[in-house]
Length: 615
Ligand code: ASP
Image 1 (tube, rainbow, N blue to C red):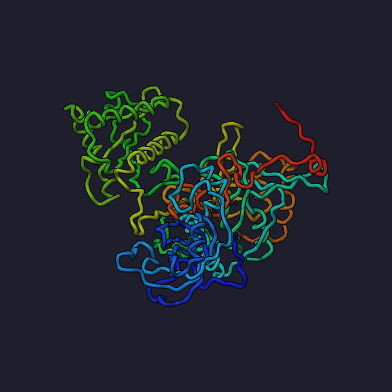
Image 2 (cartoon, protein in one colour; image 1 turned 90 degrees about the vertical axis):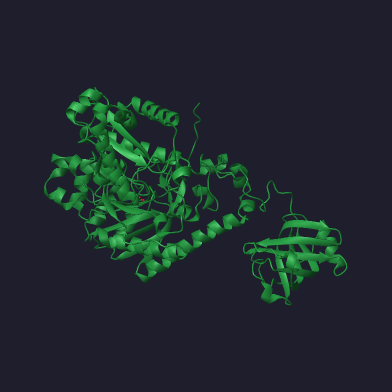
């Protein structure tokens, strides 16, 4: 039999009471986390969002309550009424904040029972994520999940407060809108009223925030949901949250300072320190030094050994002339035995082989008298980068790799970017492989845990191999460098045009991107044309925006950062799903509500839709 709540109110949470509260009469309400039956004494651990408190039911003192406690099972909802008392010295639990006290209950109400749950929120996380997602309400009862959602709340609140203090307005923009090109597929919503027409859910509020600048709102932000129907990867969600902002009359630096400010505030609020301003690097340098546009600065950079590999040396070692030779070191991988090292070298070689690259075994090279000198010069250069990175010289536990182009590699496109990218990826993969040895990815509780970086001067255009056309690298509203426009490079040398676009990178993850926008209608039109869009097509897709641009558009720019990803890093979580209350699976399914689902014929008819099932 369940009890009625009546007019009872809880006086404290389950995480609140301490030794100083001894003697107080209290009413606690919560879930039964665990129950221990010692015959005439029954212990119930009561749990809520705030913590766990032990409740004791003594058959002599509270026979009725004791009888109810006998019936209580995990996840039952109960109210315990009684007095706070100090635990005996041997019963104190120093691991629990409430571990010095317990409630000597005089009364117990069973407010609700519970089915035997498929997993216990009292236990460590279970491996089966599908079950966790299906029973998300039980999963969210786990303290770890509550903590993740608390971090998320605090971070978002700190951002809001900071931006408010800087004069930003939080302004909502529509979800039922039309396509915004961010490079993904749209989620479409059929219109019932307008047969055959569709809204698109926004991939971002890009055009609305730009229009707010045209409207003179000056500083806009929004913590906003965006929808992108992409092929899902483990770390993507079809709907995700951005901290999105836009400003009027900014230089890039103006935006950097705002972002650094709200990040500092949101890290501070959960007790983490970061150093601002963040370092900056151009896209070209990022590729040259790290082989990737989102460098992980927790590892040493790539070292250019092109000059060390002289023409005659290349001839004797069967290395292609002219092309870059690149090396890097993964520090502190441990003492590898000769066999392990050789095996690793041949694995790396096998991996590079198909792309026309090879690995140069420096240890072997050095053992040959004829190559001793050059090998030493290569070690020295690799060692210099390692010293810059960690202030100590190279030793036998550091593992260096030198990648060379094989003879006959002629298909290298301009700038040999691909070689840098291959080596950059290899550097990251090896660092991952040895992460338990070098431990450079572990949090150490210092400002070094968070390596932020601004990457600037992205190329404006990207060559799309599939369509064989130039496409935008950021989005088509990004402004090219004024110098490149003035020099006419849009048509004479599109590859050389730089965008006023920037990414913010944290520990090798892209946290967000933004740009200074095009504010002139003639330039916008020119860009659409350069992207192969006819004037008619541009008008059909963005006519409203081209129109708006003509009514006094100020220079403006902004950025958007992924909130889910940021919170994931701050919570030390392993996936975005750990920091989103109700996430979707990698197949874009919500297992709890069971969505998406087929809909009734009547609904389809109303929407003027007739499904044609393709086999
Ligand atoms: N709309 C862009 C994005 O979602 C961000 C920006 O340019 O502000 O990536």
